[in-house]
Length: 167
Image (cartoon, rainbow, N blue to C red; front, side, top):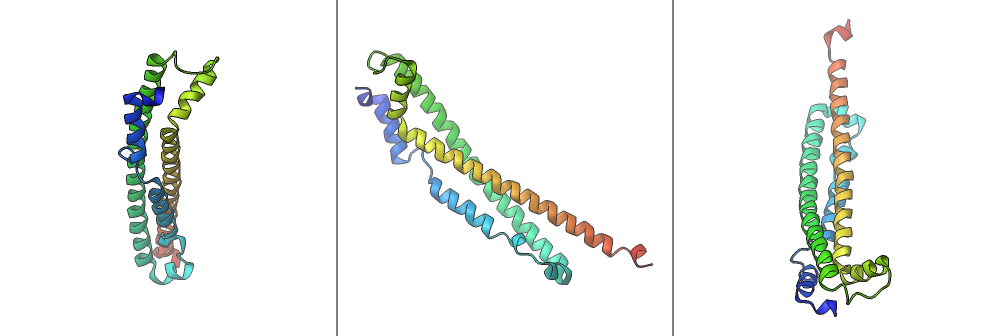
């Protein structure tokens, strides 16, 4: 049986015990919390008019800090995704070459499906890591858009304080 192969057992054990895995649930939760807690989401017109510089500076700095944390999370997930995908691909080829006579199925698709079932825990983790990367991209993109809005507000405030406007 293929699952008894030492290489296969070691890989599955590594994935299941978390030596390769990251806690994707906590990563997703942190990304959601960072996005929900951004000050720029709740900045009002009155705040900008009354405390323009202070409000915009705080919002901008927090936005950049949160963006950096999201990039850090994405980097960890991307690194793990690469490592796990590479190891899975190597093991996939190993199973095909070393156990080709033990793989049930008449068609290539049936044999691939059988191997995918053996490597299901790795496939599931790869999917979760892809999800973390996608969500991180969304939050990073939103941070970039918030930074653009802040820059536009600053330009508007600069225009409104120009002396030639008051003539």
